[in-house]
Image (cartoon, rainbow, N blue to C red; front, side, top):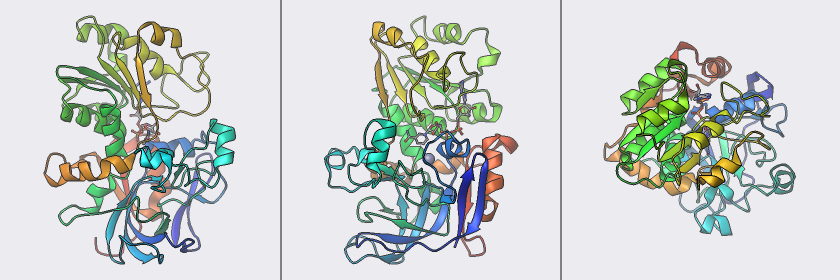
Amino acid sequence: MQALCWYGKNDVRVETVADPKLLLPTDAILRVTRTAICGSDLHLLHGAVPGMAAGDILGHEFTGEVVETGPEVKKLQRGDRVVVPFAISCGQCYACRHELWALCDNSNPNAALSSRIYGDGVGALFGYSHPMGGYAGGQAQYVRVPYADVGPLKIPDGVSDEQALLLSDIFPTGYMAAENCDLHPGNTVAIWGCGPVGQFAIRSALILGAARVIAIDRIPERLRMAAAGGAEPLHPNQVDDLQEELLWRTSGRGPDACIDAVGLQPHGRRPGSSQGATVLHQAIAACRKGGTVSIPGVYEGDLNGVPFGTAFAKGLTFRMGPTHIHRYLRPLMQRIQQGEIDPAFVITHRCPLAQAPEAYRLFNHKQQDCIKVVLNPWPQQAA
Ligand code: NAD
Ligand code: ZN
């Protein structure tokens, strides 16, 4: 089959590799129908995530058609159309039983390695390094899905693969980021980063009752999409001082909640910060006393330059982490079916899997107004 393989910093290639096989009785094999490139894949592209190996297949956002199931799979059948959460969860451990799906205790065979790097055994993800489980990803023609009765959700008639694809990660991620803000009527939320995650955080904050959302980014077309979604755009270079501007827009108090939808490698790195704590720094400074800082953006390792004393003195609440997609799949699928939101608004580019390396370049450099790329592994077949 064809698959997008990682070879090192800024080096991804489409290659012919062996088809995946069933390894356990609870596995399924999917023929991937659509897959997307995520901002998290850019951290891999930049070599910012430890424990990658040459030839690793990337991709954690995908839909597929079931082609084979292990003997213990009960809920899926050949031919089912499904969307798959990016996190791999066993469904039985302490974390899964407590709806902390992304923190599964059993799915990561390399938990000891992840303990050495992250300080604990983290749950496994598709296509996201060996410490994160070493599972092949879905930017490929086929993918093996472990615990097939736990993660995949059948796509109802009337919902397209593209719409469902956005439930594998970024729609729930934006939604959980907004939910983590513990919003009350009348609240104002400030969101740093208007990438795909920021876009869904904006719309989710408004769905969850925020009165106002202020969206911060430097990329004009992303700010335009944010405004179309109901946010007040804010370009940091077009104001004298971002903090002053946020105070000015919130009666001198600061936003009730701040969402960091940027994570690692922000623009405008602060001197003395190892990986760039610029956005966290600004969010902590801007947030009103007693407010919440919600962090869907991915971080790795230790962060210098985070003003923890300020956060303590202001009595801030921090919420963060990988998204518990399984929690949100059904409720957000319902919102799509009821016509409350069409998540495909975020897709700006569609291309065959064979062109994935070029698509990574476009998305990485934000060229051609690229916001979200969807790849088709079978372009020669009818959609
Ligand atoms: P993206 O790279 O497309 O978007 C990031 C945006 O942040 C860009 O538009 C960029 O211009 C903007 N930005 C950079 N520096 C900024 C700054 N200083 N101030 C304001 N804006 C700034 O990525 P994405 O797909 O939207 O993902 C965003 C983040 O969310 C990434 O860190 C990604 O890894 C993370 N993520 C986390 C989860 C999770 O489970 N928690 C899931 C998916 C993505
Ligand atoms: Zn993703």
